[in-house]
Image (tube, rainbow, N blue to C red; front, side, top):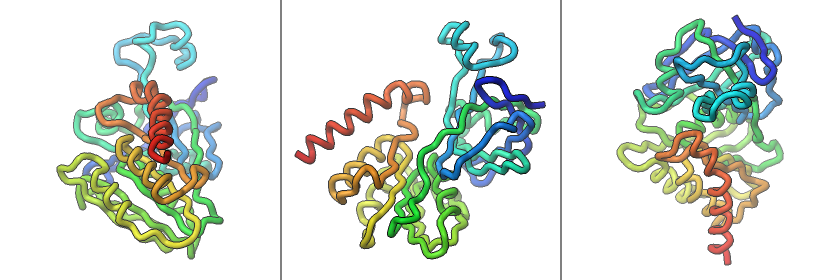
Length: 277
């Protein structure tokens, strides 16, 4: 069923579950995950490979070979998703997908996914875990950041202090979050407002505790940009205490966002320098 190729993992869907109106959980397994490993980070991610239907790809399938031998317009597409959970004993990888009907590529795939469907994966990557030495933790995001924030909360020990602000469409999209920490969770309902607008207001209105914070802020690039300026310049939080990035951008697909993200980051830094000056 599953085999490890030289540049990616190959697994198969084991089971699926709709955990809220706009999120589907898919568990992937198989012998092809034998070399898959995480390293204790709470924002581990994989890139899911989506070959075009009807296109003949080199055998055995390899992303690297496709890129070396095929026209760019036929290269398999990649979509980045957070590892919600990984069990090395059972070789089960859990990924939560945000879905909005027929919109996008991975969401509709998740809606149709069935046991036995083959899944190709690159990774994992990652770069964040809550700092045990922090006095308190700030975890902020939209639905795309919810899996990483949920995983981060599960990793926090008894007595850790966390302020969590999560934006979703409405109360039906809330999820039960497990943690031993002293976590104050605020669900922000988007309604008909632009993504992140009410979340920015909520973070600005938060009474920040004393002490050193370690913050994780991810989601749609527009609100992340606003919050980065607020946290960096208004609250004086150094970048070494921030994991902050746009996971996605309204109106731009994943390929377009990856291509533009470097320039976008440089623009954000330049704007912050001008603002600070």
